[in-house]
Image (cartoon, rainbow, N blue to C red; front, side, top):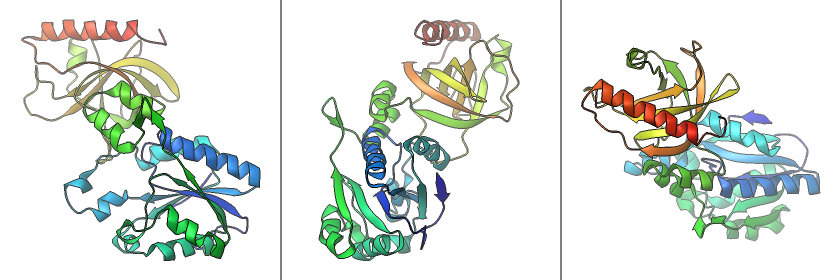
Length: 311
């Protein structure tokens, strides 16, 4: 997969099949589109293109509280997930205010004339161009003029719920991790660096790794305790994780992400790890003493181990 951080004026002479969208989360709805992209690529012997944007368009277009949208995937996480779909070119077109003002027909002309497109696959709700005036009908109206075929993919529905990034964000922010995972088609994950903490966990015999997320736009699930899987240097471990403010021992009101990795004692300071959320087991709670806190953490660990597919 060739990754380009631009809207190219040329790729190569091979005819292409393309899909366009933000693909935040690469969830089951997106996967339906991407699987069809792969099918058409093979059937018609075309090069495949995923045309996406960075930053997220809502960060630019909506200059209000909605522009503070938290994202399901960072750019690197999106790349990681998209590598599973046999894509030839992944284009991250810089989304700017100027780009948002492009008329829909001008954007379609760019695609047709510069990327040699023969087949376009569009999700059921895709809109584009100035004031979001472009839609499937824009492509249909122009397909004969520019010599491509248009295909619209219907909504993916699970348990009578339309799969969408917005719905998944709501589930995660409410702590409904298992519902979010169903719509994603995989367990939600975060990528972070292990940093120094107060080492309180070591004092009570339950060491934890403090996780720092560098991308401020990454969505962190609701505060609470989770059963998780942790990928460290391409090896998967089980563990438990607390997200919150450590109210029993900390008063500075700084949110922390701490993970206890089962049967693990390696030095991973300053290393990047990925944490996959399997289940949320309780809210964060303030305890009367460190002993009460330790007892509860041990209960949490046992609960996670009892439900652990790796144990």
